[in-house]
Structures are given as C-alpha cells and as structure tokens.
Length: 367
Ligand SMILES: Nc1ncnc2c1ncn2[C@@H]1O[C@H](COP(=O)(O)OP(=O)(O)OP(=O)(O)O)[C@@H](O)[C@H]1O
Ligand SMILES: [Mg+2]
Image: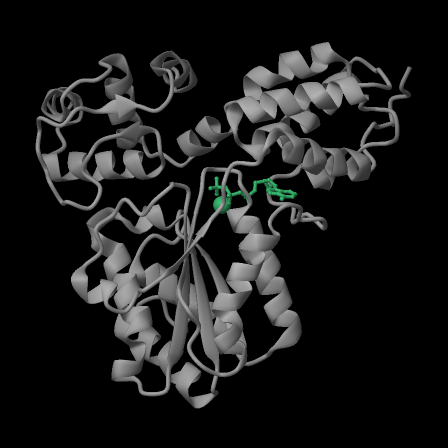
C-alpha cells in the first residue's frame, strides 16, 4: 500500500506535454537537415528556409526547441524566435513576438502600428548584424485571410525595404504537404527545404516511452507488459502525446488505488481520455459561435456548407463572412475537413466532414 504522501512518480514534469525531453531519439536525420538550413546564419548570411511536415506528435516542435537551444548556446548573432501561431495568428501578432524577443520587452504602446514594429525589428537585424530565424509553428493558423502570405512576405522581403536585414523562416505544419496555395510573390522568396517527420515505428515508440518511464517513474512501477500495452495504444493513435498522457493518467490511477504498480486496468481505463488529448485541446480554443458551427456540423454529418450556414444563421443571426471564417478555423484546428484551403473558394455546396466521430464531439461540447 502507498502511504498518502507517497507517489509513484520520480518526476511528474516529464509527463507534461510541454516538457522538452533530454533524450530526443530517432530524429537525427531531421536535426541534421535543420542544422544544414541554419548553418549560413551562423556564418552571418541568410539561412535556408525550411518547411517541417508530418503528423501530430512526431517531434516537430521538439526538434525546433532542441535546435534553438543549440543556436542560443553557440551564437549571439543569430536570434531564434519560436512563434506559436495558434496564439499569434496575425502578421501583427507575429512581429509583436519578434520585437519582444529582440528587445526583451513588449513594444512601448499597445497602439503602435505594424509598420513601426516591423521597422524596428528589421533595423535591429541590419544594424546589429543579427540574423533572425523565425519558426512559425502550426502555421496553418495563419491560413485564414491570407495572413501567412503577409507574414512570409514581410519577413522574407524585409531586406528590400531595410537593406542588410536578414531573416529566415522555418514553417511547421501537422500535415503531409503544404495544402495551401501561397501567393506567387511569396513563392519566389520562400523556397523551402522540406523536412519530413514520419510516424514513429512501434519499436521507436517503445524506446521513447521506455526512456520516459525510466526517468519519470520509480523502478518497477511500470512492468514490461504494461509498457508494451501503452506502446500498442500509442501506435494505434499515431501520436506520441497519447502515450505520454496515458503513462501519466495510468500512474495517477494506480496512485488513487494506493497501488505501488500500474496495472493493465489502469491503462485500459485511462486510454478513453488519453486518446482524445487532441480533441480536448482543440475544443478549448474555440469561441461560442465556433462551437455552434461545430455542433451543427456534427449533428448533420457530411452536410453542405450552405445548409449548415442556414441553421447557423437561424440560431445566431451571424452573416456568411463570419461563417466562412469559422469554417476556416475549424479546418485549421483539424476538427473538420473542407476542400477550400488556399483556393479562396466560398462555395456553399462544399461538403463538411468531421475528423472525429460526431458523437465524441457532441458529448464533449455538451449538446
Ligand atoms: N523522439 C522523441 N523523443 C522523445 N520524446 C519525443 C520525441 N518526439 C516527440 N516526443 C514527445 O512527444 C510529444 C509531442 O512532440 P511534439 O510536440 O514535438 O510533436 P509535433 O510533431 O510538434 O506535434 P503537432 O504536430 O501536434 O504539433 C512531446 O511531449 C515530446 O516531448
Ligand atoms: Mg507541434
């Protein structure tokens, strides 16, 4: 039996999703490609742009953090900035982050124009001989209103308005390909080296999770059999996050029973919640009217956009522009699929499809 103050976790932080693993296994090739891209920056010139592609939970964000850690340790002339586009989803917000990173504080007044922020950032790069490397993580959140074109254009043509400014971009996308048609003026400057992050194999998943277990739990808490089971579930979902979350929940579940070991039942019971880490996360970011469209789309699976819009309009009174925006966002956060990424098509006859079982969605948004 566990005493009430006892725990099975040696270090519970290791199971938080933003934990940066010390051992980053099976990503040597991708790390080498990334280093190849940023090498010119370390020598004072413009880096090669990169585009990291691959399914969720395949180490893309982790690779960038690892790379940036190394750059910061080796050079003060290269300024790496990681932008989470889910939070900073406009050109203004992105440059606000760059400014904050460069100067160590946010811009002086909240009313400052984009142009002023841009100039300060670009001038700093030119005058201080600093090369900026901007990672646009989850860049799909910039696909609405062509923000991504504005961001890339501003970053990659900065030297035209501010000679000497040097910036490079690493775009990151949880898809197998860039399913967005970039503006031709951007294409000419964003010639990105594609770096693919394939799904981990079963053996790789087992080894990665094995390390977490070794570092995060006390010995003998997780048996070989239980680790195999967690590996199976993780492989099924394809997302390493599911495995990490599952280890945490199973550990907590065993603690609750005051058991010193995690049992297969702990794993089985926790899986229901862990497999939907993504869905839960995505739903949290939605506003009320966005949830409304999602609910309607789930209630009327595979309906045409026009039909969903009529119902949405009836319920909320909102117009088509807002509806179109919401569809874009739900597509970007990968809750639904439509076929309009990039083409700018507004057709009401498009079919809206759910990426999750509509029942799962409906029971989570309390309808
Ligand atoms: N090779 C690895 N070794 C150890 N841990 C890893 C490895 N790859 C991924 N992880 C862990 O898996 C989790 C997900 O990784 P990460 O956030 O890098 O995925 P991602 O590819 O950016 O996913 P998404 O597309 O959903 O943003 C993180 O908690 C990370 O620590
Ligand atoms: Mg990521």
